[in-house]
Length: 378
Image (cartoon, rainbow, N blue to C red):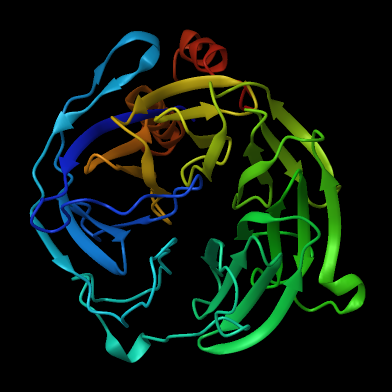
């Protein structure tokens, strides 16, 4: 399967909504995306100061323009609607937002007050919070994990009930629930990037504080991002500008894409269409999509200033970033047209003998075999 960018849009947050965004952290986690069911528009959630805002951006088809080295050139678009999200007020600046995708017939994006919870820190806010991110469990939407760097702690909640605290050796910077770990249910294994280590935690285990495994990277090169794929693989990246893919069943790396980014890596997300592809965000305003097995970059795009937020839609290959200039960049990615046409040709070939007893010509077999990596058996 070959992926390609269908469109890249650039929209500007209305100055009447946010005049000057609050400064962001190195890990830009103040943006979340949700594509409507019909795919015609995308809801973009951004956080600035003590508030969360919602913007509606159209996703109509548009041509893709490319510059040098497969760099995409954005097409300007307008924000269809924008508003302030009606949620619990926050006493201090919001550092991270994340969406929990649930099956629901309501795709209007309206606020549901019945599902609003407010939880105070375990130490009642004493000392510095230093929030380092949060994540939802994919299989249990009410379960969330929150990391605090300076406190070296991770708190797990089920709605507003505190379930467990995990204590790291280094300062955590990113965390993610594993989708298919092979060690149990999806909502029990947590991958954490702390310092120059990748650690895996089992919320059901009491021994060793719940820590399953510690995998050390290059000494002194801090990990800033971690993500997991539907196949169970875990990817980490950071100061060494390298993406390392681990198989959690063997605790060993299966791929290292060295120096795939020009600067430090602060965001990662596997493709929902093909987990052999990964999206990489760097501090140099660049976001790239590449094939990590072949170490090959497919395309990239750049923001116009520092990232305040970067995210990928949960079940679709729509990635977006928000810059401190107020610009929002959003890329829609799909399967390459030639791959779709090839699939239709193969389908028609296997369907033909049942509809038409005429035997296909021999050269058709030769063409089909030469165009496939694993030839079919006849």
